[in-house]
Amino acid sequence: MTQPTIVAKQPSVLELEPGTYYFCTCGNSEDGVFCNGSHQGTGLAPMQFTVEEKQKVALCKCKHSNNLPFCDGGHSKL
Image 1 (cartoon, helix red, strand yellow):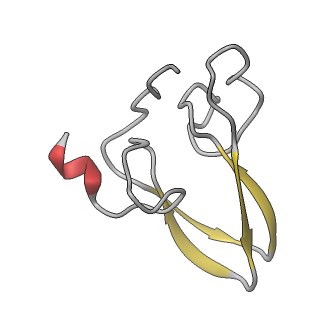
Image 2 (cartoon, helix red, strand yellow):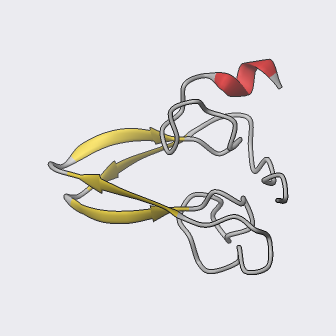
């Protein structure tokens, strides 16, 4: 399995509407946050997550959080 690409050492803070989303776990997508299919051939797959109500979230861009898709501050150890 391939190691994910570190997109940034800070999260992407977004306000998301209720719905189902697919988080990029490989780091190869254009924005580094939402899957666009760039993981093909990496051995990595997107992570589905659901937002129940409109809320602000901090999504991990370093791909090393222990709480993916959400940032847990793990980027500070890289």
